[in-house]
Amino acid sequence: MSMAQESEYSPDSDRIMAVSLGPQHPGAGHFRIRLWLDGDYVVRSDPDPGYVHRGEEKMSEYRNYIQNVPHLERPVILDSSNILFPYALGVDELMGSKIPPRGQYLRVIMSEINRIISHMYFLGIQGYFMGHTTMITWCMGDRDFWIDLGERIGGARVTFAYVIPGGVRNDIPEYAIEKGLKTCDWFDKRMDEYEKIFFDNPMVRQRSDGVGVLSREDAVALGATGTVARASGLTFDVRKDEPYSSYGDFEFKTPVLAQGDSWARAYVALLDMRESVKIIRQALKKLPQGPVRLKLGPQPRVPAGEVYSRTEGARGEMSYYIVSDGSPRPYRLKIGVPSAKNLRILPHLLKGVHVADVPVIYWGLNYWPVEADR
Amino acid sequence: MSKAQPPQPSPPQPLTAAPTTPPRAQAPPAAPAPTNPEPVRAKEFAAKFTAKFPSAKVDWTKEHRVKLTVTPQEVGEAALFVRDSLKFDHISTVSGVDWIARNELEVVYFVGSSVTGLEDFVFALAERVPRDDPVVPTLIAVWRGAEYPERETHEMFGINFKGHPSQAHLFLPEDWNDLPPLRKDYVSPGR
Image (cartoon, rainbow over all chains, first blue to last red; front, top):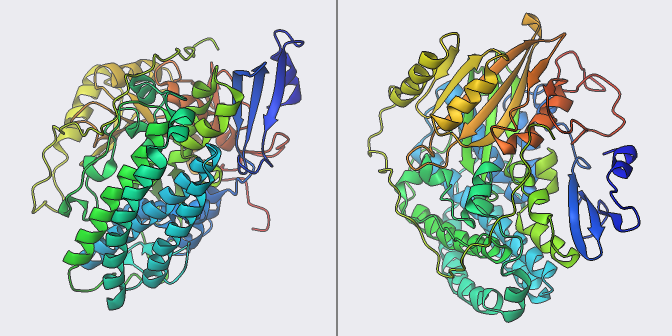
């Protein structure tokens, strides 16, 4: 927004103050929210993303379908397998590939590990914004055990580049299965402690109960997705709605809360992680034998066509619209990321809140600036 | 702000601490899923749509997807039909495509539904405009969530959404002074 437009919005310039939150604010990330304040109240807000826009969509038009794998996970390195998953599904669908069952299970395992890694980061920072600094130390510490597990499977610590068109990049080592089951058992106990120390904490409840309430109707109209939608009573979960890969094989629930406030948006992430642990445990125990990927070659030919593929990422519905003209490179690749979908809700929720509640509401949307900018 | 409806203040929901998982009406898919099932539902939607808009073109039908193209003149009415009669109530993604060889720009609205039994389906409503005069009506009045995706499509493809409250740059720098970057005739620096 230009300065001229900004000064236009001042019904009473003596009373209304324009404040810029970010982009260099330690909490806001690479993202700015313009706030217009009347005393301690926000009368209007205007999110200003784009500080980390890298043109991922344009970049993919210059690279072939395999070269696109590593850079496409850069927008959200916390959730790297989940941003690649729909891409792999889309390319598989265009090529008519049938992924071996072991590859499908490994995709699911890695995607759920990434969901936990992402939610732990989200909960840690959310605790920090509520003034509960224990939360960030616990979450960052415990998150590392999942990163370790991901490293044993994928070989890297955050950017695994594991889910690729045609299957997964490599097989899981035998010892990682045992290690994974142990991590699951330990994490189950740990989450009970999280409920006690964090979600039943009177301070956390005071700071988040009834803060930034998003009604079910608004959630639908504004196109909320993921944890934000499920905290407002919507049952959106692509894993259940349209079971892709091998999600139909596992027993799990879609946690849904009705409150729609910041507390629910954080708590639904914890419930999500409980389901993820269930899925990982089942998948590790039932892991079928066989190959994990198809031989595609370094420059696969993808037949002409269009596909819209989607999966449930940690933050919500992750979707790709891929247009292929039969050449080795995508003609058009659109990444529909959940952060960009949930960004529309921010100005709606910030209307009329206290300035002190802005960080809690902002981070409660599970917004990741780099993912939204692409 | 002519067509956009102002956000209504939302009444706080009653606090219920216990997590609830409403029963899902959809049955889980049968175990041996056929490799290429006939897209029955997609064809039904396409038939309903083309009965109302005979000039619409069915681009493709898949098991959980359908894509239809209408003219920019009737896209507003078509969107209302998709929302109210076919019950697709929220925007998922809006994408542009530059068909430079045909001198056309395409806008595709991917819309989803929160209605039980329709959550697995994504409806794609597309329209095409000439590249020299890319003007389409905004659909914010139909789907409120279309505001930012349309703004992004505007800056990346140079498509003008008539009636949009603000088409200021969202992701591009304020002083971007070049072709819209996702157009095919814009070449990335160094390429």
